[in-house]
Image (tube, rainbow, N blue to C red; front, side, top):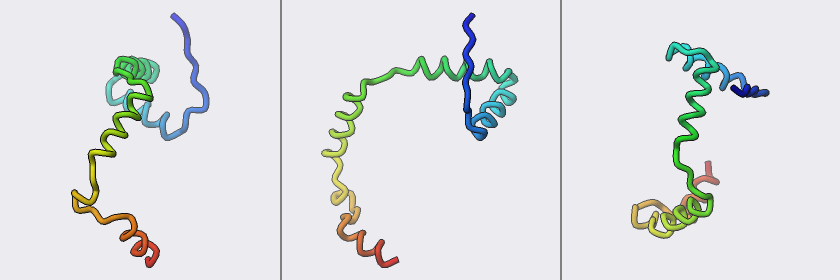
Length: 81
């Protein structure tokens, strides 16, 4: 079985991984393998598809219709703080 070494893991991430492993009664290595398997099972969409979906939502959503103020109204309020 291949071995994977990961370097420069941020301390906060390492601590969270270790805590999750302990909570699940697994070793750190077993926990990381399970999390990698879960991440790889999730369907992926091409970036172009994701961006197209965002564009569609952007054009369908109208902040004004939802009662949100426009940015030109918010800027002076923000600057006066």
